[in-house]
Image (cartoon, rainbow, N blue to C red; front, side, top):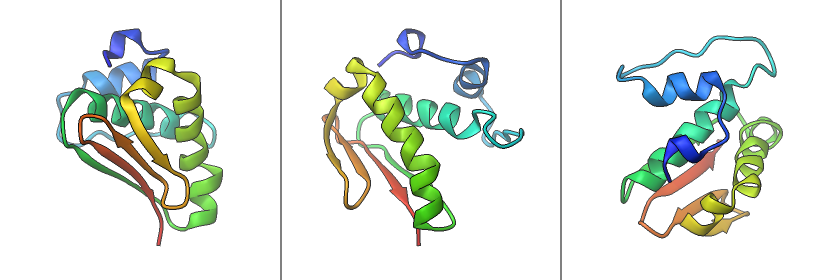
Length: 108
């Protein structure tokens, strides 16, 4: 899935284009950080085979109201992404891709 075909914010584009080993995203609540970062992670999972990507949060309730909700919104809005995802395990919060990559939304 090419990033240029993705509905994207400036924040997504900057994160996706970064060559830095660590990228710091700053901003207030509801500034789009989680959404943009998850868009980048989905792109990386699609572009590179057998990637294991884990999104970690402090607890399940916060993940469900934030990172998981955003991941599902991204997934549900993109026909292209849906074609590349083999399976979404709702119980374990795991997106499995046809190329062997996996994105997990994980909380303790």
